[in-house]
Image (cartoon, rainbow, N blue to C red; front, top):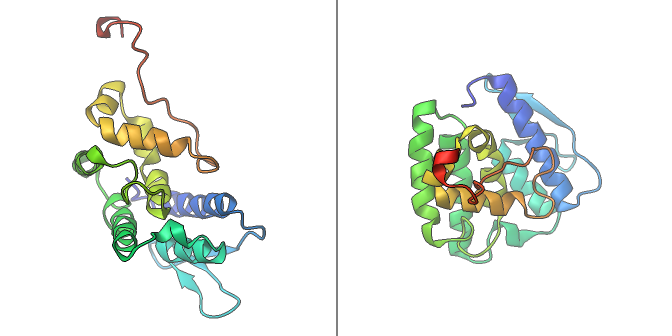
Length: 183
C-alpha cells in the first residue's frame, strides 16, 4: 500500500508528531529522512541519529517516561516488539492482495483480545492503528463485518483519547435499524 515513498514518509512523520502529542511531549522534534526508502531520522542531541519509525517511536515513549506502552512484562515487551516489526516489515510494504491476508491474520489474532498485547494498550496498538487506518477507510461495510475483530479493535483504538490526531474518524458499524436489503 505504501510503495510511493513520499506518501509513506509523510505518513510516518505525521504519525511521529501525533505520537509526540499523545505522549504529551512539549518540544516537538525535528525529523529528516534518509535513503531511497526515505526512512525517518531523528537527530538526537545526546548522541547518534535515531533511524526508523519503530526506533524513534520507542525513544519517544522512553522520553515521555511511559514504559508501560512498551509492555509491563518480558512477554508483553516481546509481543509489542513483534507487532511493531510486523507493522514495518509486512503492513507498510504490502500489496493490495496481501492486505486481505494481513487483515484475516489480524482478525484471528484479535478474536480473544482487546489489544494487541492482550488486555493492555501499548505502542503496538498505536502504530498498527496508524498503519492500518488508510486500509480500513477503504473497506466496504461488508468487508468491515468480515473482519469484525479488526473493526472492533480499530474502533476502540480510534476512540482512545489523544490517538486519532491527524487522522479522520472512520465509521465502522452499519446502522442495524434497517435490514440488509435496504443498503
